[in-house]
Length: 484
Image (cartoon, rainbow, N blue to C red; front, side):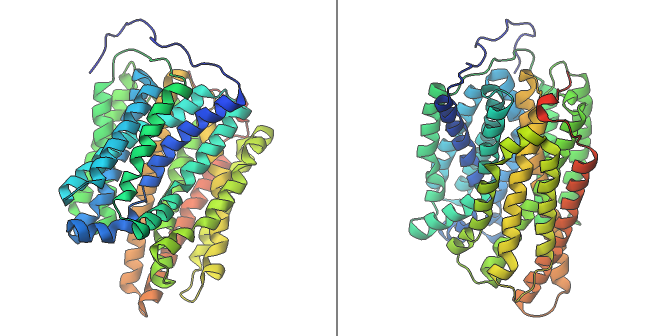
């Protein structure tokens, strides 16, 4: 899996510098559509699980792997997907990833038995791991650093952040009005359309030829896959599960070996020089911590709306609409504020809003309705996400060398995914412990467990706020330079 170590430089020229707003808008639309397809798929089948279980005769344990097969492949292969884009060309990698995602969605939508669907979901995860890092890297290489990139990152971040809530709404609509199969089949025409549009609108990046870091790819992929698997086991069985503990031990050994390999590799899959810049290191810590609380919030709010408030799947999905609208309203102004004030003030405000949202949810009571208990925190959460994630992305990608754009993007999304998986595992464990000792009606028990989980989530948000305050400096993104 390697090419000669001293081949000619790139066979593709540098990206076209086309400043025309209409063309840049088309570029952004194609890239964001590709990523939104992946983001939506993380939740679109959630509300369809009962129908899937009935049609394909899944066992209760096996049904969870409709979600886990996708999570395991996606989270485990993100680093590898980012580096493949650096070496093979990011537009080419994105096209292959989108087509693989569309093909696997077709196979899943036509599945006649449980094993067939699980294999298709794992294949979807592989396609998503090729797609996601290349989308963010292509924004870095097609949009010059400054206002245009900040605007593109703002749109990208808003789409990435609301993908989960859009998935819940879309999944509820398709399942209620048609069939669960359309939650997968809808990706086929979208994927084909994106694949056809990519060579027309998006410039290819130079291929940074050289020796592929096979040892780093093996240890990194195996290590992150083991870590994701261990977190999945924890969320299902608790922290005393033997397989979970074995997975954590294996992951620790593999990731330690990965760090050693990367420190010596000539062209590492995850260049350690990415961490030499203080702001970038703080940004990576932020994108690990913030999703840790958010993924859990989505999970428990979905439970609360359906099992306490009595909402159906479609209405539960629409319950997240105020958060989505607040995010859109906020992110419109973030690029200009970022250019004027720099990342740190926005990050401080955004993480403070997320702390306030988690603290508000911590006080949730069984008698609270949607307006009194959920509406305010959802609006704060949307504003906090809109104010936080785009400046974090801009901080991480500011001053990045083109040869490292794919690796930097892959690491960013790997940490987001691991943070969300870690956070959900911890909060589900807190929830389980609280509900085992709670008394009262089922609604009261669920609310007690959820509020305890939100309390831990607020501590995670406070930790992220401290990282922003202490580690990230006040330098504006345009003054930051990545380590060379």
